[in-house]
Image (cartoon, rainbow, N blue to C red; front, top):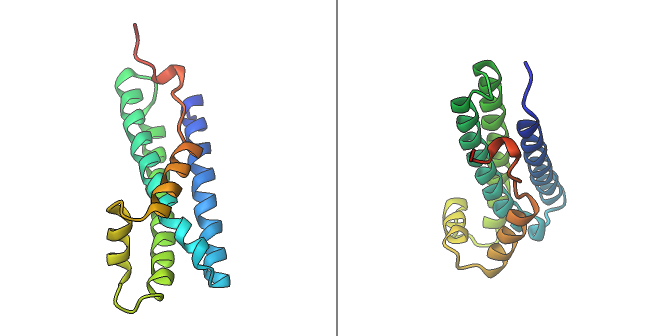
Length: 144
């Protein structure tokens, strides 16, 4: 089974993002570093966005005949597992951060982060969106 060049490049970007979220989480957990823990959720959101984008692009490649079903099944499995890794990292970081405030459980913290009320979170989210932007390949450009 072979992936298209576009899929390989996209998976490379995703692999880098997931590798970074994993490394940040390990450092935060190992050293009790709350600054590092704060970086996890915005990167996890970026990983989710990348996975959504790759799924959409994969569907378009399937429709256009550029991808086959077998490779697609493997690709979707990879995306699901990368998202799970990133989600686990998010849970670990949220638990570390919630220890700062006994009244804020990890889910409340995450909702607060996603509400856009935290300038540092917003800046980090923007940074990661730019760092891990998926380029549009020739395969994914509309014909005509």
